[in-house]
Length: 136
Image 1 (cartoon, rainbow, N blue to C red):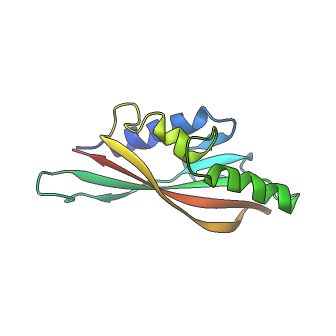
Image 2: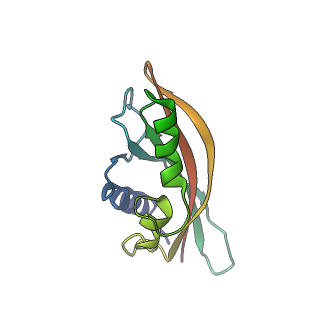
């Protein structure tokens, strides 16, 4: 059975190796330092199979400063890229898809909701990723 908090913490730790800041919790981030990753508590599917496997679906938000619209879009697009390019979410997950042994596998499913995110009085540009993990 997966330890949800341990998997969430392991994912945040992996993202922390990137140059961006990581926020493991979204609650009190009135004005997060950007660029940053925000790892949200995942959706949990308990009865994925009759064998008792569990599926975790994390929403991971990436935010950048919006002062220069073109540069902000380029920054977000860079982490959305597929393949093994350094700094992409795919490359970070592919480096250890077991999240330091907390799950059996992890995959980036999609990038979505590209646009504005407001925290406090500051609007950032970003997107959300669906990251799925499976554990037995």
